[in-house]
Amino acid sequence: MSAVSEAATSSAMRTREATVRRFAFTDMVFRAATHASAILVLVLLGGVAISLIAGSWEALSKFGISFLSTESWNPVTENFGALAPIYGTIVTSAIAIVIAVPIGIGIAVFLTELCPRPLRRPIGIAVELLAGIPSIIYGIWGLFVFAPFLQTTIQPFIIWLFKGIPGLNSLFAGPPYGIGLLTSSLILAIMVLPFITSITKDVFDTVPAVLKESAYGIGCTTWEVTRRVTIPYTRVGIMGGVMLGLGRALGETMAVTFVIGNAHRISASLFAPGTTISATIANEFTEADGAIYTSSLVALGLILFIITFIILALARYMLLRIDSRTGA
Amino acid sequence: MSTAQSLHQSRKRKNAVMMALCVIAAGIGLAWLALILGALLYKGLSGVSLAVFTQMTPPPGDAGGLLNAIYGSIVMTIIGIVVGTPIGVLAGTYMAEYGRFSKLTTVVRFINDILLSAPSIIVGLFVYELMVRPMGHFSAIAGAVALSILVIPVVVRTTEDMLNLVPNALREAGTAIGAPRWVVIRSVAYRAALSGIVTGILLAIARISGETAPLLFTALNNQFWSSNLNAPMASLPVTIFQFALSPYEEWQQLAWTGALIITLTVLGLSIIARSLTGRREDR
Image (cartoon, rainbow over all chains, first blue to last red; front, side):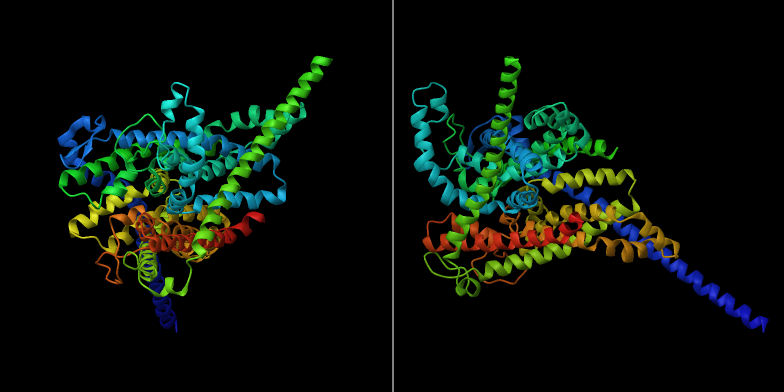
């Protein structure tokens, strides 16, 4: 009797032990799998950096640091320099940000302060839907609708307007192609607008109600509350959003490729066709023959990677600071 | 008294001007969306016909459809999602469950956020160096890998965020009845965060279905029907790119129609994704 129950207990103990061991084993396997996947994310970024450096090694060792300061881009003589694409990238992104930031902040103020409550969500969603539209759609729209419009109406007017003013007349010198640096900047501005808007709106929502209410309580107008309370309180977060938008603009490929004109030269006029790093890669990579040509294009990619990495890291750092403040 | 009054008036005026500017800014944002969608509908709808979905991409100057491009896009998107999603979900799980307070999680979160907004053309270059150059030719599988690299950060981010929203009491209840950690994660945490994780996957599909840059020099393009994963494959975005920049009327029309298909797909997916999590916000 006791022997039977003892045997039953010990076999129960054994199965229990086996189950616990099995559980411990599967748990370990699962944990290792999740751990490995998390590390894979780091490996991906490292892999990108290593492969770009390896791919661009040939060009960088041939041209050295002058790769950054040479304007010439000549596949025939195999003499390559990155200055024109870098110039185009920076100029188009900078103009885009200058246009998009005030509009983005304006929309955020509208959404948080002015918009009737029932409309708030639909409009917020509509602006965010703009962010989801693939860049190629902006490109095809820019090429077939926006550029001809600029070419026939806006650009001739601006050229006429600034004809006699020194400085401005070379900045807006004709002929109006429609495509070019300014058109790309405008398309980029449309594209980064939703990012800047939604982040600004999010950080505006972190302002404690009591701060705004006390400002209203002493008689401030809505604009004064925005200018003196909301914006100073969220300055770091807004900067983070702007940097995030800048990162997008710098790396944006397809929309720009359609409307930039792909000309490897630096001209004073914003109406002239130019090129950006990403547009150059997209346009020329599959047609590049010769190792040094391909390698130079990868080197352009490496430059873009470094620039965007720094900008995005700064953006994340600033947004983290806002997060930790609201978390505390 | 009168200076105080005039100050009051000027403050009020300034407020009215600034607020009007904000309303105009919002109007511009919405008008732009309407303009783009309007042009897309106007130019795209006129080319929609059964042939678009049943015929191959035509040679220059001929009528045809987008069947092989649509097929290629679907195949590469599916492979990209199938490869990228498990990695993303597992990494997100590590960050929210096993390693919530570890140093690694902070680093991975930072790097992942950078990957999330890194230029997609860089990913294309990476996969070119990783797969196309060693293999010696362009292939659909390289395109799919490039897309999966874009999927991972989106899924990691939403998975981690959603798992962090699951109340700890649920996990403790699971552990208290003796369930091991991974069973708790699988049957409690995943189940509670399911709609959020699905949202992340939908957003990832929406993102990669319109991506062009990473496919340009991985999957390349193909005029013809091909289901061979080891060969170049057509995709909707790359076909749009090629056709839109061509001088042929028929090709440009097909590009507009393709653009309309992609936009409707992406907008549809984002709206579904939003409605999945939207209910939670309204509560």
